[in-house]
Length: 207
Image (cartoon, rainbow, N blue to C red; front, side):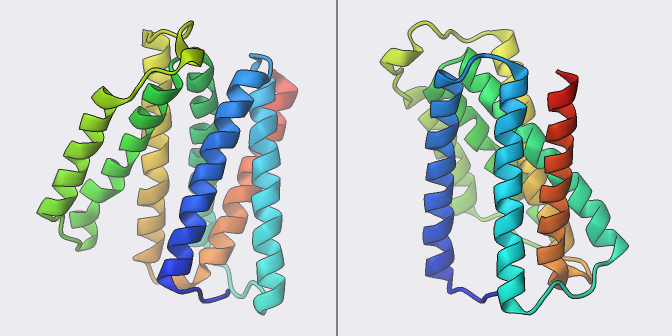
């Protein structure tokens, strides 16, 4: 795989996260409220990401070896990814955009708090960051488009599921990167997106 500098990775991550949030919000407010359309969105995203990783692999020398551990973690990662996406879209359809976004963003707390299990130290700055994220929840403005979308137990449950599964993404990647198979990150992502694509297609057929 290509080796990118940390600033470049940060810029790409921020732009990708912003684009995903904007596109997901637009999709949730413009596309008919039907489960199969959410699975379609997940299928499109998974196929696109899988193809992008495959192209990068082709340009950087191929896949290499793939262990059983990587395949198993890839399956978990793929399921967590698609569940995060679909429940996120469902929550955006039912509840306020601003509160939904902040609540699901709290998922970053999960891999951070799991850090000690991987030999990492949770610093005071990280605790302060968690506190600030919670404060942001109460400061989030309600948009005009949110006027007809009120908080409910169903909406809160969807936010909770999306947040937990999103946190599981980070934990799964930590497990893989702390294993003897950390060099198989590309294979992990390909398996994950393949599983997410197949799962989305199956769910579309069922709905």
